[in-house]
Image (cartoon, rainbow, N blue to C red; front, side, top):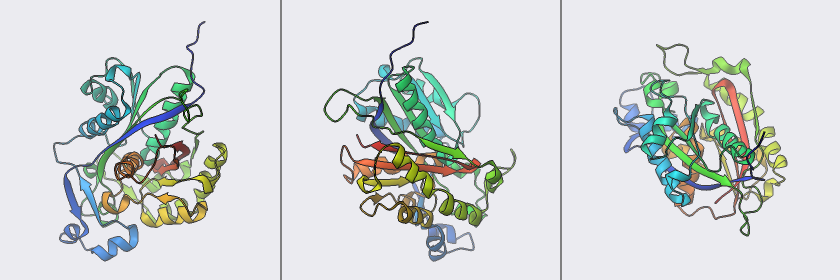
Length: 324
């Protein structure tokens, strides 16, 4: 048996993001719901969110974000061996979104699969793609988090419709190179897990239902159970929290983000707060936040970033990466 040669490590080559054009403000929601801008901001920190057009699909948004990441990586479609789409809101389960996205991007016959770890999906996909590169089963992997949560939300339920939104974020990863500064792995070991006892706290109960969430239970879990996970991810990557330049948690709730940032003990790190203007885009939130921070010049190549995704399942995953 002959095995393909893998790589000592994997690194991110580029990010890309996409947001739909339609902006829905808190005042827009207050026109039809018993809510207000102050009520929403005080509870979840959101001022506005983006919603996809009725005919805009998860695949459409994934293609837009992935195209930007692919262009930024300097690679061609022919260089991509594997496409992974993290989503929990695909319009249908068959065919998978990843194969459709690959075809539309001109990627010929890659490995392609969808991954559902809900809001932790991008970090799960990043770990899977990194492992594929290290094992030698792929050299370059395109990873996408894409969600159209608006089609799974009851727009008369103020406990959920104020939170969720649509969008996509993507990353291209490849082997750690031999150039200066590229020899060390740029994607650290993943620290992940799940708590099935909490599965009913965020769910779609059946095919005829919308998203259901017990907000207070989720808030208590996230603010008490996750800070050891982010610290463990730093330990596994041999990075002290004081070395971090940025902390990018899943954009679930501004109060959760701020609580995790305080417990991390990295006061010098920038903290992503895309939640304010983008809402909760589930698996898209982390790559979308990273791509926007890169575009705004808030991050420098070589910066250490700590990521953590968490959500329905409940699933969670964290890792340290190096900004390309």
